[in-house]
Image (cartoon, rainbow, N blue to C red; front, side):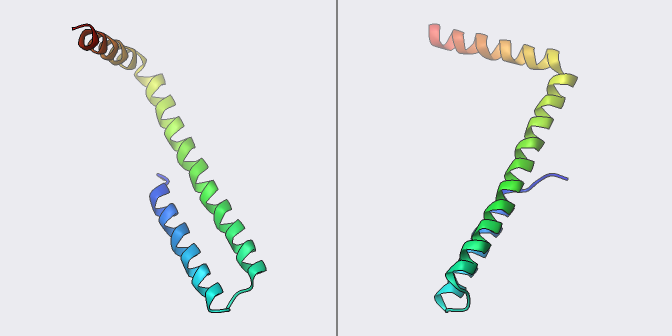
Length: 87
């Protein structure tokens, strides 16, 4: 499954805003806010780790399967950059 970091971040901010509104209404104490924020941060950090692992694994798989293509494109990119800078 592809991790959706953007959606996880939006959910984090929505939940944080709901928590702030509940605190402003006096429905939750400051200690409860601190505890819930710690849980929200931990959840978002887990999603970030999963997203980074997904990207790394994808790049690693691409490298292992298409090493020659990646090297060729890198060389073409370097030659093109050199040609543009020198001209």
